[in-house]
Image (cartoon, rainbow, N blue to C red):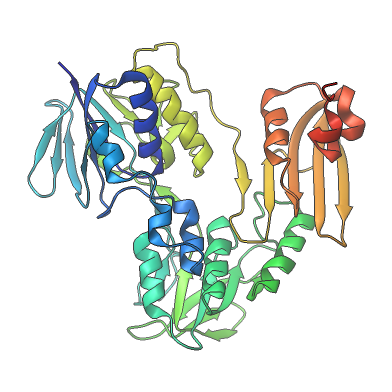
Amino acid sequence: MSEPLVVVGNGMAATRFIDELMQRALGRYSVIVIGAEPRLSYNRVLLSSLLAGEVGEDAIELKPRGWWERRGVTTLDGQTVAAIDRRARVVKLANGQNFTFSKLVLATGSRPIRLPKPGMMLQNVLTFRDLADVGAMHALLRKETSAAVIGGGLLGIEAAYGLAKAGVKVTLIHLMERLMERQLDHRAAALLKHAIEAKGVKVLLGADTKRVLGEEHASGLELSCGRVLPVDFVVCAVGIRPNSQLAVEAGIAVNGGIMVDDGLSTSDPNIFALGECAEHRGCVYGLVEPANEQAAILARRLAGDRTAAYLGSSPATNLKVSGVNVFSAGEFIEHPSNEVLLLEDEGVGIYKKLVIENNRLKGAVLFGDTADGLWYHGLIRSGADISQMRDELAFGPALALPQAA
């Protein structure tokens, strides 16, 4: 008889996990996937493209309903989990339904952070995290609409680009002195700023938000320097926090996220977590690639492979803005103990920075031409000796690798 397996959350991590599990253990579990959003899972990476009008809503769906049905998976859309009874092994829904489980997977994702500044709870102050956020922005689009986006990281840049492409007059506000300061060095960040401004986004760096102005609806954004930006709405894209409240209330160990071991097990051996809600060895990853790696390991574990272990990720960053190609991975800030290879062609907008230490590639930043990003990422992750290809390394595998006769 199939074991009852309940998955809480139906985002990208949960979908990848089910896909991996069904390839390894189809029929072993009776699976129920519970999602809070009123639709099947979709690709959040493409939300900026949806906002920009470059793709339609159907294009971002990960798996059609028939895919789930053919694998015998029950999906419950638009349902909120109210509590987890660990002793009885029951998941309780807000609508009164209860589901028993032998194994439970928490893939609850994350929630956007709102700055603790006055006016952040006014109407027309939005976040950029899901389809509902995109729908709220689309509803506000009028002729000559203006908006401020707070946050110069991945999400903020993608939101600002999507709005600009949709015809909104956008100002991007960032507290730090360069965009994507955690993923880019100063030169790449400067190139990115220029490219984003060419897309119609005004960028203000070193700008601190003081408050959102307005009575019921946002009407402006005041900066700490005293400058006021009149806007029709504000988008706050300053980061995310793991959705761990269910785990906390169930008595499962939580730190920054839901704490998991190398088998993705929580402090309860029958409950697992993965994706943006999970914390592994002190790290909470807010990117797709680590979630996919965790999904594959957890699927192997639940299919019976007790040797499968997740040892952490070395994630890479890709910016999803049409015509602006940015990639970074590893430790890309130079130190006295390492060497730096630089290749730049300002005329065509190409910049490469490779950081080498002890004949190992430690980090890479690419702007303009990112085609070799995955190859560099593989070298970083493997720790391979690059001494034999060092002279050609900056030119990518086409020159650096020996060619077949």
